[in-house]
Length: 296
Image (cartoon, rainbow, N blue to C red; front, side):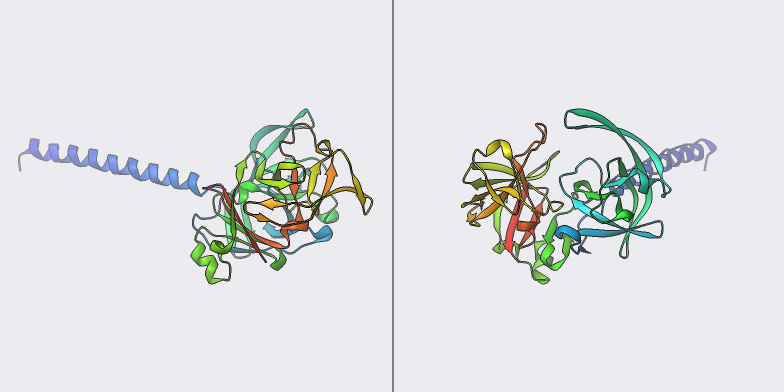
């Protein structure tokens, strides 16, 4: 073969190899960012979520050989995980910048970090972001001064909540859920806002239509006291008993809504707590922004 033709083939081969090498690098980088922070897409992951003090469910996550109980807080949306400054001081971590948040009209800056590995049962998640929360919480005792799992931890997969049976399932396939006893097609269907305020349902009550967040971190369902003119007293807490509590096409009947002075920037009219969530099964379709509610 003439020297010129051989050199030409080598040039072409070199260009082709460089092209495919670049494509491979792009695929690897894209794959890294897609996997970062989240469960595998289309996974079927069943999580054990027992209820602790005050009827609040929690998850156990293992970080660097130690197991911590995490509250499930679906209206915290900035990061997948939240830990107190005290807990973070015991854990190896990598700085990941800061974030500014507004609490009761005051702007506060919180640091964020990356945890190289978080384990749930046999499942290992890598490079999980965690945000530092400075305030103190004694709900689970001294060891869990503050540990919360936020909505971002779950939102890449549809989520089923069955707190009566201490179960959460991440699964995008309703057929798989039916195989383990959950029939989504038999549940009522209603629009669900998914955003910076978490998961919000529109509920018909004696007060009219109100927007309530789904909040397993609260024992009771709450309503903003600013919406209520006359109050009744129940168990030393001020409460409104609404004769209508309708979501989608179903009226769930009488419901106690406890009054709470939410800040002006809270963003909803209140929340649906464990006094409702524990007695119903919810399936949350994040992509289509739909909530399905069934009986336990």
